[in-house]
Length: 194
Image 1 (spheres, helix red, strand yellow):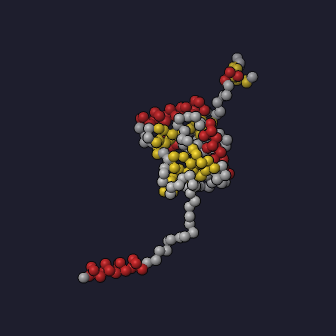
Image 2 (spheres, rainbow, N blue to C red):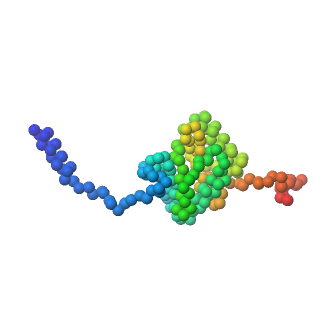
């Protein structure tokens, strides 16, 4: 009998509670092209220009930079790198580019698990970036920007590569020579353009 009374008391107490955390004034605007609910915020915006990265249910990731000077610079760097590397197989295609809101979307990819095969593949990607485009990573964690989708490896997060603006010293960019036939070497071991 004692158990029965305490159980009835608990039920009545739960029914009498009012919901105090519910707010009707909050809403999320999702672009029409995503059409699926927001399920996860991967990264929040910081005041130093870090983008807000949001994942949607259909494995689409939206990356939106803040509308301050660092955010605009990082967005322009990212768009410049995508334009430079658009023909490479390790570049994830982006879509829904919005230059006003400083955002774009791409498919979701996972971080790599470091195996010997993955190390060889991402070293190959970094070698192509350095030898062909003059882009070099000097940071502490080279696998941070490498993602995979199935057997395909992609490199993401180009906003710190100093194509237009220098943000940090993790990446360096030295533009390759456009036409090497115009370069002459003199006997004094100095290079001179003609």
